[in-house]
Amino acid sequence: MDYLKRGLLLAMVAALALSSKVVSGEIRVNSLFSNHAVLQKGKPIPVWGTGDEGEQVSVAFNGQMKKAVVKGGKWRVVLDPMEYQRQPQTMVISGVNKVVLSDILVGEVWICSGQSNMERQLGPRPPQPPLTNWEKERDGALFPLIREYHVPQRYSEERLEDAGGYWKVCSPDVVSDFSAVGYFFARSLYLHLNIPIGIVFSALGGTPAEDWTSKESLWANPLLKSLAKNYDEVMSKSYRPEGQTIGGLYNAMVYPIKAFAVKGVAWYQGESNNDRAEQYEAVLYNMICCWRQEFNQGDFPFLIVQVAPHRDMKPEIREAQRIVASKIKNGALVVTADCGLENEIHPPFKQPIGERLALAARALAYKEKVEYSGPQYWKAKKCKGAMLVYFKHAPNGLALRSGDRVTGFTICGRDGVFYSAEAIIKGSNVVVWSKDVAEPTTVRYGWACFPHLNLIGVNGIPASPFSSDRI
View 1 (cartoon, rainbow, N blue to C red):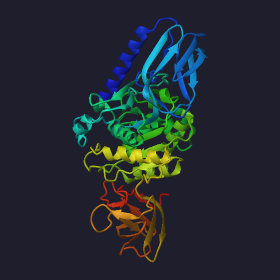
View 2 (spheres, one colour):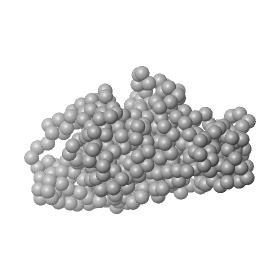
View 3 (cartoon, rainbow, N blue to C red):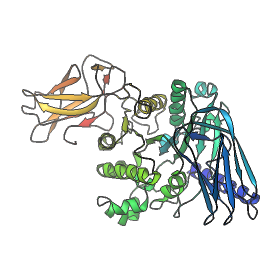
View 4 (cartoon, rainbow, N blue to C red):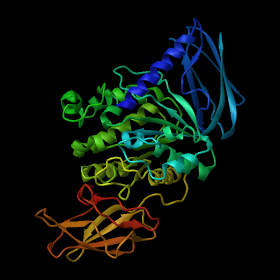
């Protein structure tokens, strides 16, 4: 709640500051285009703003000059795709006045969105536990080619044209306020690619995925129309963020950035849908389709961080995330089976999550031949009183993180009663059986709120929980 109020205050201050400078006839540029911005390499770059009707506007950047005329109070130009620019560039927007933006780079831009585990900053946030080695991480964060644009945290019943945010250059002085997952993701990409990285941070704790989806998209989906119709009743059964309204986060924190050229999305959310976990597959899939349609930038990579183990987090929520990641084009699942705490919903282990997001981005967005995932369930078949489980993303076989026997498998027969199971690794497969189940039909792995798991790929990334009857 403090962060929501802080975001609203910052937005109001920014708006007042802007309005105090505006005179009749002034050309204004959207806040996404401000000092220290990172623009997306290799894509057309829309640049837009507002002005008085009929005003002539020109935008000069990196050897290009584009012109437009204000119509309906708005102007927009599109810069041609550009290569990486590691050296600071200047953008000049000219009309009856001149706006000069400095220290602009061209690199890779990623949206980092979701709820509190994406929102959680690198620095302290009592009563949450401090992040692992956060002071050392802060002191080493001298990366001027990494920048974060902060979208103010708020709901809105109306669609906002400008988020009213700002860009910050990564340094030990400011990185404590960066999204920790976003920073570790950006740092890992930067260290590997050696190019500018821009993070558009748009996250708010305690928020369900429905609120990040447009109202029209919810109403148009037959599986979610009832939810949209009964939105207030559904949401009243759990915690309600201040100002919550249907589509309110989409209106205030997604719509204003949807025209900005980006590479993809890193998404870390699900805890606030836990009470409706069985519905989450439809909700998340619909939200991703909504974003891709509204952004109009194709099927950009969508990297889904799985909710970490916790005493209250249902296995169904992780299963929904696994299924959605497998269904969508350019989707990836970041498994966090080893990153949870039983009694803490905000675990301090954010470095491996950021690094796994970067691995997924390298594979999907930058086409590197790198195994970015831990083992993922593919299929299962009966095999002489046992189940033979096949895994994807395990080309070099499976291994154990600890111990000498596989843990976390259960199995059932036609009666649907699950029993703890024995399991052995056979290359990239696992054979699972139980003395209590003569004719198994379904096998599960990690099917608990806080499972104790040790199956990994040879790259050290854990296998995802699953249930063989779910897909």
